[in-house]
Image 1 (cartoon, one colour):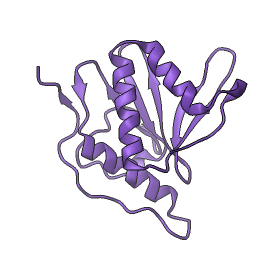
Image 2: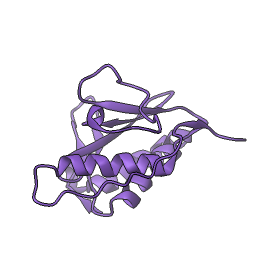
Image 3: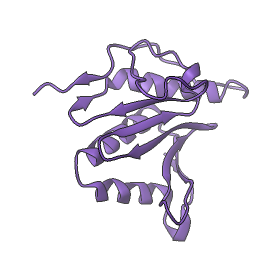
Length: 154
């Protein structure tokens, strides 16, 4: 995994790790798990911190030949927004938010929900392939998908 620089001498990856730890609840666990799945799908993924301003510490972004997705935490949901999600095939039905837009699609994960790991990794790989479509050698797309967002079994 590659890193881009964040402000004040801290790498984007270090900042993201710190933010995840600060959440200290299920949201941090979910965001950390999704981060690991992105890294497993693409060991060359770049972690960035975008949209830093006085009122916001910034948003984690994962990129490869362009943006793949953002990872944000809210009070009741962890949201992963795919920049070009409307152009991705989603046979497992992971996208459940921002469905009305022409470009983006998002996955909202609520407490107690689990995302189908192979379907999520397939979305990440599709996004990378789409980003690389105009380049000389696009990344491969893995078609292995199964049912998506399911309640955790407890």
